[in-house]
Length: 296
Ligand code: GUN
Image (tube, rainbow, N blue to C red; front, side):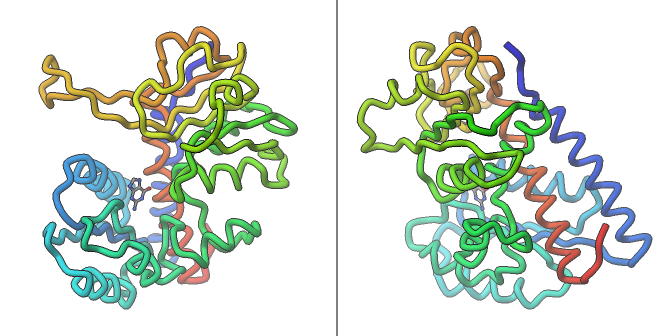
């Protein structure tokens, strides 16, 4: 079994981005700007947002966090997004999901200018993704997974990929990317979800198994074919009184046992998670370059 080290690969991506941000500044006097919006005080979202802003700043981007209270109105959120749409220093806008229940997330996403939609959640960008239009964005988590597969030279063409989960953030775009007509993809994709009959049997057919279901240790060793590539997108918080924070992170895969059958596997933490931020910043740089019509 080989470990897929997302920390290592993301560090290399961030180093490359840092050099490109410096070159943009030196050559064109441009600094890419990323605005991150968080509504409410969900502890996990707070951590993710803090990390996104921190990493963006570390690679030399202009990064600002906008916090709105948990009882913010739809109008307040939309007004903030519109202000950021009109701010020339801001090239990328991200509104952390999920927002509190009074917020209509679809309406918020559709208010973000597609050219600043670095999450690739706007219907225009989702459509571009589906038809393979290169000037849109690619959603961060699925793109992080594709980058890991490429980095480890994992053969995908003709392989059977099984994706567990059909969310707009991970499962659906993952299926689109894996089935693309490209040397780095060309998989046959099966998508499993809550209504799928006999998920274990389908999983056992997978050469590449991507698990994004949000249930700790859902995939057990008996569900995995010998030699399969296993990608774990799970970030489940499990109570653990021995930890200072009071919890530990667990993936959707029973790593201890599945790792004995897999050819490659991502750990949690340190697998897919760090890649997501690296891809977000890749998209922010792309948004900046497109806005200024420059290349790096
Ligand atoms: N919540 C969990 N993952 C994501 C993400 O990639 N983007 C946003 N905006 N919210 C998230």
